[in-house]
Length: 425
Image (cartoon, rainbow, N blue to C red; front, side):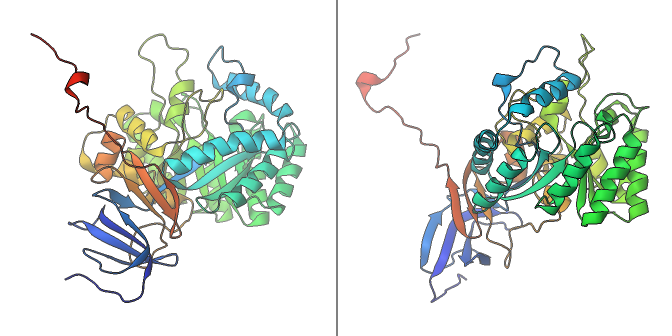
């Protein structure tokens, strides 16, 4: 039986598929809240949108992006295609970054991400003697100006080390005092990785914030800074507030070792992010055949209780000279690389750019009665099909307000006989 309401709604999205419902339903929104999800909801609405069978969900969540150094291919060289070269080239380029320059480049990526259905994002920003606070100030502006469509959190990040550059520690401390949401470290670029980890934890504890490390970005299973991160997490009681990204050496380990590490991560409450585009591009460069994929098996690790996500990382720079900030494309890439075929595995990949990713950021998520009216429509029948097909993103709303509309695909058939192409056997 259809519902009836005498009070006009702010938004009514009709004829959509929602996970857990076996029929097409309508989503009724008042203010910024979903008040009903059911078929045939009869009510006037200020905005009435026909979803025409699209799949509706809570939107994509990008847990790991570098907005500050996006779109700098025109000022960098890529000769080796290695991590060391990418770090070196970017360090040189960011000396000349201006606040306006960072803002303009970052906005390009943010607007693409919005159009691809991303509703929440964690961006790293390098704060050190070369970058100063210019990139940080630019991203704070973007965080405010694009809040209508996306929640952005900023991670003050030490890309080039700390023990070798003590001034960076002071600058990170200041960034946290002036609006950064969390702090990030990169032990593998520091001469003293263990001390680097300790210093990042000291900052996090002082400011009461979460931590996100770039970690073990290589293919040597015998060389890892992960034990130091696990030990510090447990020592400081920071379980559930630490994430690690890349950890590509997991791809070089036997399955039994991966499972053992996954169990330790789960026990310590440490989340894992894999970055397929960057990890594929930068690893395995010394191999001239049978090149290693270099992508950590997130689907295996997730099954051991670890919160996992798949994210964008870099866009159009020496770390990743490709990209459009599409998370469904990244999910499809991971599923291909991981050689997944079972529906439950593919479903888990969708969760890694949605619900699981939001959990990593400690953010509310989901499309249900009473939830925030943040809704994205995909031109597909559901999450598994979305990953398999790289489902096209149609439209989205943030807190009940439409934030983008890509429109439906419009195929124009030629009806004129004169213009038809005829083929003869």
